[in-house]
Amino acid sequence: MDPGEHVYSLSVYAEYSQFFLGDAAFQPDIGSPAFWNPLALQRRLAVRVRGLMGCGTARYDHVPLEVDVGPQAPPLSDLDAWQHVVEASLNLSSGGLVIDGPISYQPGASFEIRLDPGLYCVRVYYGGLDVPESDHYKLVLWPASSHGPVHVIRALDDRQPFTASY
Image (cartoon, rainbow, N blue to C red):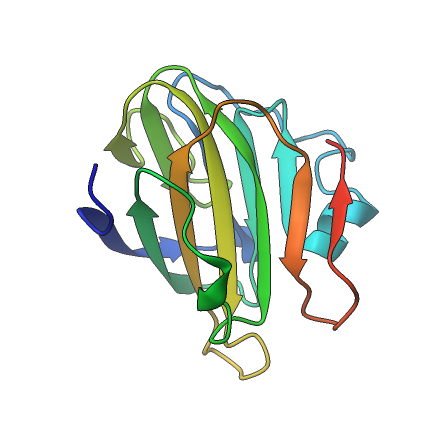
């Protein structure tokens, strides 16, 4: 995969101010309060069994999302346009990446990107969070060799970046 070769622009319905991304073979069970626990709310990213992620959004509506799949991590020098940036591991054992709102999320019916099966690092960029209806999001995925903890690279509230276990 060449950088930028696999770029997708979507409008995702952020039901309950969130959207999901996960493995096409993973059937989500997000009823547990542990999914959107206080730490997940703070970092704006919930991770469940490394097969599903929930990205918190600034509104309950359609939000613009760009998805970029590349061969390696993008440089950290591209952060200036973003208010909040966090990354975590996602296991795509089926090779299908499904993206949709939490109610609409349906492997086989939701938007799906076919990738090589395996483990990926996902960096989520959040922008326009302080201007009503201007929030926008970007996902960058690249192959990973091992699971890593959730890592906040840039925090909206200007706290120091932090790393947390699942």
